[in-house]
Image (cartoon, rainbow, N blue to C red; front, top):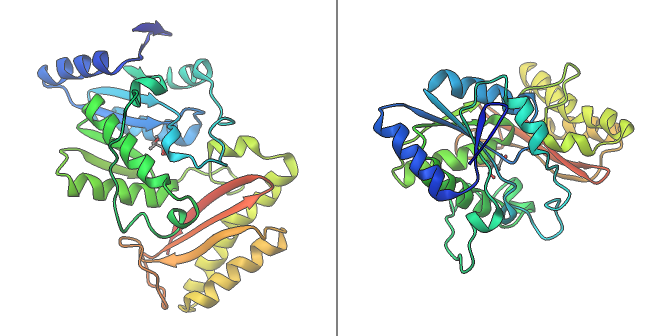
Length: 285
Ligand code: PAF
C-alpha cells in the first residue's frame, strides 16, 4: 500500500478486501467506480456521483486483458497512473485499487461469467468475448472492493445493461447507477480512445454524434421507420467519409431487441472506425 497525493493506492486483492471489510464493519457505504485508467471528465463525473452517494470511494484502474480481442488495442491502451492520480485528487477518492494482471488473473485461472443474450447484439457481434471479459472482471472487482454502490457511464450502454442484468441474476447486493454521456462542446462523446485520433480524424468523428442528432430530429418529425432513420444516420457518416461502420442500429433500450418501428426510449447505438480508432456513441429516443 502506498500514499500518493494523499490517495491510498492498493495493489493487491487481500489488502483491498481487508480494507473493504473494515470499512463495512464501521457501517460505512462503499461506492465504486471501475475504470481502465486514461481518465477524462466522463470518469470524473461518475466519481463525483459516487462520492456523493457513499461514505468511502474506491476507484479501480485496471486495463483488463480479457475484454480485448487479439487484434485490439490492449498494448496501446494509455497507461498513466501518475496523470490519473492527479486527475482524481480533486474528487476526494479514498482508495485507488491498481492491481497487476497476475493479481487478478493468477496462473491457472479458468472461471468466467457471461450474460448470455444481452451480450450478443451490437458490440458483442463485432468483439467476440469482449463482454465475457467485462462481466468476469467486474464481478471479480465487486468481490474484491465489496461496494454497496457502483457507478458506470451510459457511453458503454450495452455494458451498463449487461452489468445490471448480472447483478440482478446473481443476486448481488449492489446498486448500479448509470450516468449520462459527457460530451465536448462540439458533441464528441468523451472517450479514452479519442486520444488516438489525429486532428483530421477528430473532426470526422463529430459525424457520430451528428448522425445520432439527425436520427433524433427525423424521429421527432414523425418518422418511426427504423430502416429509414438508420439510413439518414448513415448518410451523415458517409458525408464525413466514415464507411467502416460496425453498426448503426435502433433497438429496445432495455432488452436490446431489434425494432421495425421506433418508440420513445429506444436506443440508437453506433460503432464505427475513424482511421484505426473504433469509437462508439449512443442516444435514447
Ligand atoms: O468501462 C470500462 O472502462 C471497463 O469496461 C470496465 C467496466 C472498467 C471493466 O474493465
